[in-house]
Image (spheres, rainbow, N blue to C red):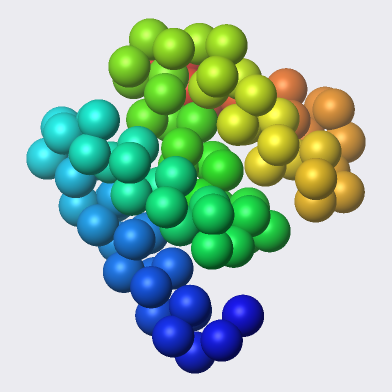
Amino acid sequence: MTKSNEKDYNDFFHKGLDYFHRGELENSLKFYNKAIKLNPLRSNIWANRAQVLYKMKNYDEAFKSAKKNYSSFGYSFFDFFFSFKYFLY
C-alpha cells in the first residue's frame, strides 16, 4: 500500500468511526466500505463494519463481516463465535 493509500485508508476508517459514534450508520458504513476497498486485509475494519451492520439490523451481512474478520486471519470458529456474541449485548 502506498503512503497515499495508507493515508486515505486511515481517513476513511476514522470518518467511519466518527459517523458511527454520532449514530450516522449509513455514512459510517459508506466510509468503512471505502477503507475496505483500499485494504481488505485489516481485521479491525471488518469488525467495525460488522458492528455497524448489526446496529442497522442487517444481521446476515453483519455475521459475514464478523466471520471475515476471523476466518481470513487464522482465528478459529470458537474465537469467532465467542466474539460475535459481543454484538448481541
